[in-house]
Amino acid sequence: MSTPLVEARDIVKRYGATTALADGRLTVLPGESHALVGRNGAGKSTLVTLLTGLQAPDEGTVRFDGQPAPSLTDRDAWRRKVACVYQKPTVVPDLTVAENLFINRQPVGRAGVISWRRLRDRAAELLDTWDVRVDPEARTSDLKVEDRQMVEIARALSFGARFIVLDEPTAQLDNREIERLFTRMRALQESGVTFLFISHHLQEVYEVCQTVTVLRDARWITTAPVAELPRAALVEAMAGESIQVIENLAEQAVRRDVDDLTPVLLDARGLTSDAYENVDLTVRRGEVVGLAGSSASGKIELAESLAGLHTPSGGTAQLDGRRLPFGDVQAALRAGVGCVPRDRHDQGLVAGMTVGDNTTLSVLDRLGRFGFVGGDRKRRLATELIDRLDIHTEGPGQPVSDLSGGNAQKVVMARALASDPRLLVLINPTAGVDVKSKESLLARVDGAREDGTAVLVVSDELDDLRRCDRVLVLFHGRVVAEHPAGWRDHELIASIEGVDHG
Image 1 (cartoon, rainbow, N blue to C red):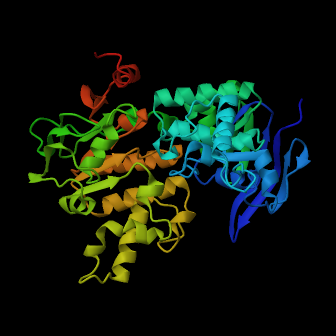
Image 2 (tube, rainbow, N blue to C red):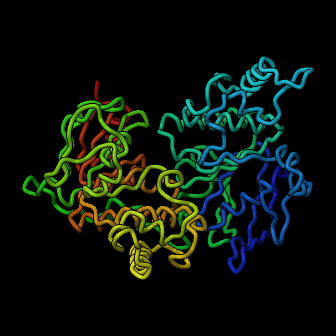
């Protein structure tokens, strides 16, 4: 057996009274794609901070190629060993690709002035070496998500690192983009690059990884070849119990009969923008309607327009008989729209605030008069929402930044529900959360349905869309298909991929 490229043994990491890792273990062999999976709070993020040299373990050892990990202060040595491509980009958006690749190490001429020609040449050479097909002079903010990820990988490889951690790399990609990413990963593996792949999408683990390690409750549970571990056994290892119920969400979903006599709450006609065209959409009281499509279909932009984030160039929408305002989030909120945005980091949470502050942000006007917020009322409402959403937290006063991904997403959902909305717009509501948090969040969809709320679910996750009474498919900005509840996977995917229509 070859020497492991990366090995973590008997890892313990504590933060005050909290033990984030009690028994962390990981052995990654050269040239493999190794999956690290576990429910939110299992210890994955903590292990990554130790593997990338951001922190040191309280107990245990981390080794690279059989040698002890560098000192935390030797950042150059760590860059030569490992890099992490996070779900949230670390590139500087207003700089070019070349500038991002060699930031703080630009080639300089005799007078100490940056040589822009040499910078472009070195960037082009680096991108060509690793077959990253991106213009070195393109502004990074103009790149697609998948290309930004490849730029980050190329930057890491330029330091000499051959171990790349991919943290939820597919969360913002559609099916075609995911397949292109996997193709690039396989090519890089053949060139000697090793990946640690962190994902909540287990089908991706089986598609791109050779080995999987499971963490649960801050402890190592198992490491096994992917080909020898059935999916049911993998999820059971993550959950610590039989999860057959979780795997059959379609059968679990509680649906109400919605017929033509049920009042229409949302009635949109002829909505048009740069991203979508002439969309008619109705959602009845207690109905859950899904929007499916590729990342370029316009589905997210359509949902965001209804939540007040964009102004369509044409068309109108009414909510409960009143004109729905566009381009004004606060006005949409007052009109009765609650929203879980697509990115909880940038759009959903205020990182410097507490759980209680975040859950009640949408209803501060109800908690006091003349701009004064009643502290006791705020705490009571926050506690009620924490209990209602089963948010695992020390209480309303805990910083929201301390929460795991699943619990952070529950905070975003809690704030959307706090205003008792007539229309609930959910955009990728379960992205980047574990299987149990996913089920808890989707149960809130069923609860909203029972309360008579109109719900619009935009998602790339088939399990999310199974909770819907019907699913509309957008293709190049137009609604091209409608699937009633009970659709088969291949039918919906064919519509999304443009197979069953011209």
